[in-house]
Image 1 (tube, rainbow, N blue to C red):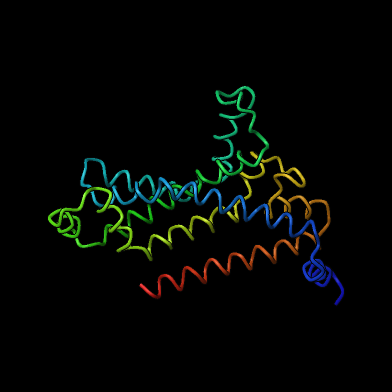
Image 2: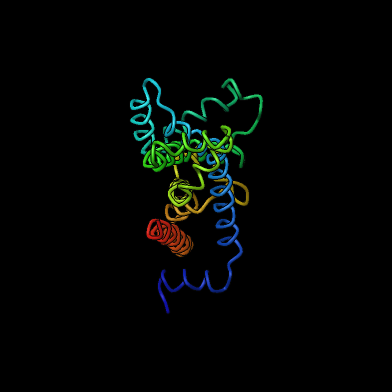
Length: 226
């Protein structure tokens, strides 16, 4: 098979080192940022869903809006904090993997928060009260609530991962697209396509499509079994 598509498939089949290194870097960043977002996002989402407090609805509206926050805006915000002239510039993490992970975690957090709160809000309002009468403490109520809605919570985590794995703005601005260090699938596609290396860009695009289809398939399975 000839042409750019055939050469792209050849890069995948032959196990091109750069293609798979970039893929591994992108997956590592995506999984790390999703995990960082889920650690505070799931408990806070549960609290937002179960607690009745003032400004709860406006908070949920803000979280829903932040789910569509442009990646370049997040990149610009974090860049202004960690650049040399920023308040956190002394940390020296600009154009490093931690900078990319931080930016992607910020993108993922509103998704985890909003989807977790939305799924748990559909639980029976008496559920926490029943657990309280049975002697459950706050941690037990939190854990049982997550278990009760584990499907939608898992879906929130998958949606967050899908969001960060396909973003390019924050990764480009915060990672600098450094070869063998911070280059991800999306930033590599943008660079290689601009240079005219369509074969490498297309190979990475195929991988990204497979990952996206895999995430969507898992989301479908999770929702279907709920």
